[in-house]
Length: 207
Image 1 (cartoon, rainbow, N blue to C red):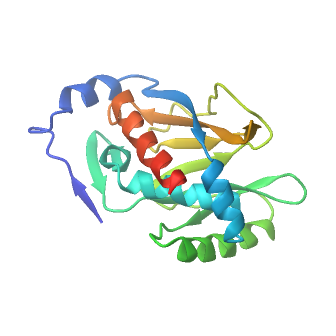
Image 2 (tube, rainbow, N blue to C red; image 1 turned 60 degrees about the horizontal axis):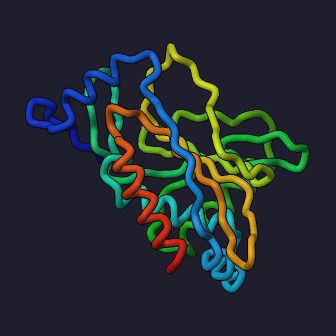
């Protein structure tokens, strides 16, 4: 479900009109999160650490209204639920795109994710599907402790789906940290909103 935003009364109408007119309305921020507790919790539950922190991220996304806005042909919509579009690596080191729904309960989320990951790993090619706009484009680059990241983009295709990427976990003196890159449409999400999202994400990682 989605609700069309009345731009006549929307406080962000001027911000949206300005940035949506840009050839490149996206910007990116990279920040480190402390994943010490999350790593321990995932191991204790015998759950993939990737799926554990991905679930934490998606819970935070669904609690963050600006991350649920999507711009479509000049209109803005607020989606009730945001789901996953994630890159999935195969044994031959190619990747495909997996899609699965947001589930508030970790066990339900992991169950659905494992089935989709197994399906993608048994296929070839990118497995691109039209799953709508109520997604986050997720990727993990666990080999690199990055401090910056850009995405390949087609400027002729106007979309506003946020992109969140996770990097290599680094352990220093028993504290595990991980870089997170967040790329968003500036007409919909400001740095302030990214900060709020990161606070929610960190709190969930610490829970």
